[in-house]
Length: 116
Figure 1: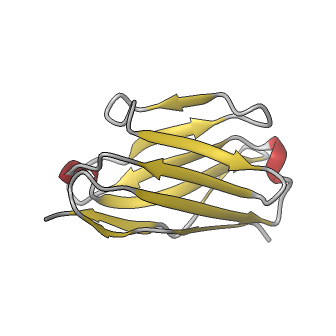
Figure 2 (figure 1 turned 180 degrees about the horizontal axis):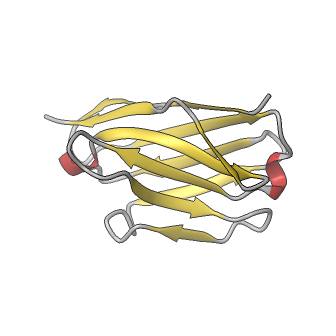
């Protein structure tokens, strides 16, 4: 059974950092591109970052370029999102996403709140 489980969210002050993790199971992780999306109330879902497989080419939303870094550890079936210089507008639920056999799978998400 496919499962994507995010962790690492929390409350952080502006300018702070968080590292999100996505634990994947139930499929061959190393051959699947992985993305991080975020969703906040009143806003459209936003693609934050994407990493290809297995080589790890990356793409970022303009809003997070230079601050966020997506990575993956295929041996552990894990994906990560390192978030630095966090801003209040980064507040959202962050979801890990993978498209497997043309079917999108998304985890339950982890809440990130940036506030002083």
